[in-house]
Length: 168
Image (cartoon, rainbow, N blue to C red; front, side, top):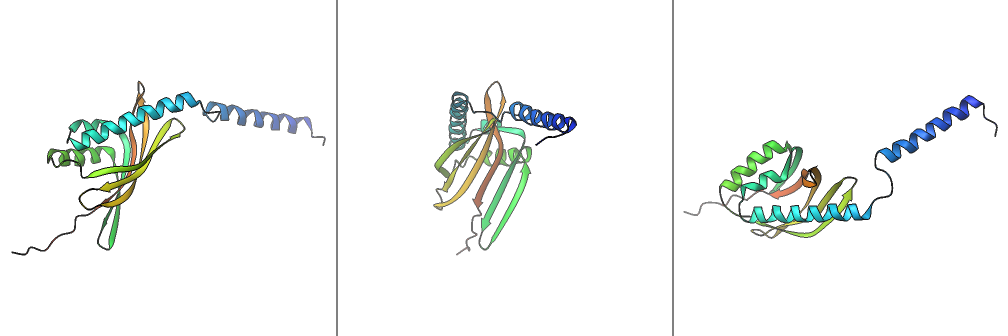
């Protein structure tokens, strides 16, 4: 097919632009060593989070990026309520909870780590040990700087404690 020179030039520039954009945005062959190193760093960060939760350590607050978000779905009785809050608000709530020194009431199961571009997503199931209920969770870890990964986006389901009737 014979195309006019102006169309061939435009098509060539468009194709070159697509290829350059593809290369510059990191959409090229993944570097397995880099991905494995990122996952190892996130495994360590997630283990640290679990330890801080278990011991009511306020340093858990520092494991979240300040510009991220947290989505919490609360299930109770016949209703579900989902709230999205900035990490800064979540850090305040978490700090209050840690100050009560109640320890962690959850265990993580079926945890998986997957690279998503420069980030690493951690997914799995939370088992609430006080009720043995299970719910999914997802945490997107992003490199904060100097190779340190912090939670940028957290999605978690919690179960509201059912009020018990006073039998006095």
